[in-house]
Image 1 (cartoon, rainbow, N blue to C red):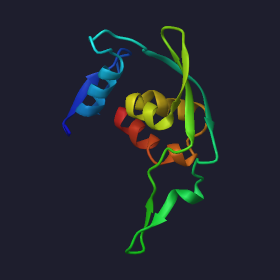
Image 2: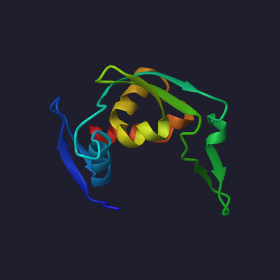
Image 3: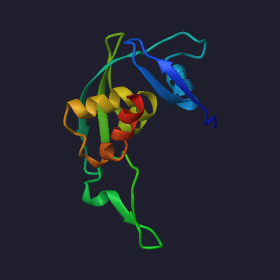
Image 4: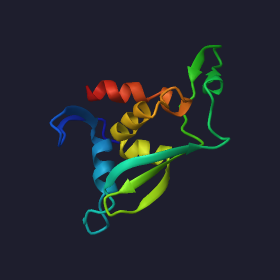
Amino acid sequence: MDMREYIAELPDGTIAEYAANVIAENMYSQCDSEGQEYLLLRKIVDHRKNVMAYTLDQGWMQTHSSRKTKKKTTKGWQLLVSWKDGTTDWLPLKELKALNPIELAEYAVANKILKEWAFAWWVKDVLRKQN
């Protein structure tokens, strides 16, 4: 696992710091086995959760030393994404978070789901690193 971080300038001119693995995964996710680009994300269209999604109360666990710690989980959430080729797909939150964390964090804020546990434990960190 490559732990280095790089400063990248995005198409809109903003500058952000990303781990090498996040950059590589994002690039590979947009290419086929021959290196041809495909399925570039246009936007996140919708979201849904099922009974497996954690509530704020379920988001904490107690360690052996009796300390409370966050459960880092995205279980039970899916997002409807629109691809630049015009297709749409429902993707698990875990997958979209790994491939497009900034777009997902901005979607969570814009759609007022930041307080949902699957977003609450990580979105603020991603946005802080972006700024």
